Image 1 (spheres, rainbow, N blue to C red):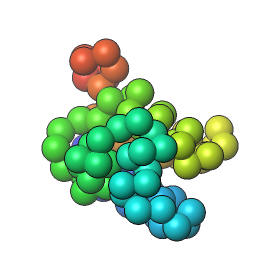
Image 2 (tube, rainbow, N blue to C red):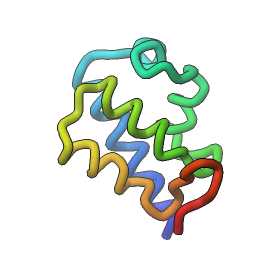
Image 3 (tube, rainbow, N blue to C red):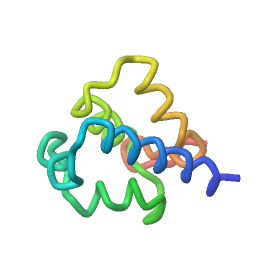
Image 4 (spheres, rainbow, N blue to C red):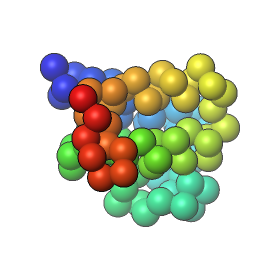
Length: 87
């Protein structure tokens, strides 16, 4: 089931980015993350995302609290906080 959760987060993130008309490069710049990190988040692969990274992306996209929660919940089973997986 964690793969399904991760796919939901990746799909929601990509849709949100496209809704504002941004490239992955623009989102990386706005969030202070690398393009590689954005690609991993949107691709649904590369292991568990860090909560801080997902929050930075949400803030960069101007998401409100409800949207941010929805984005975070897309990875709830695989979230990493301070280098430790939250289960």
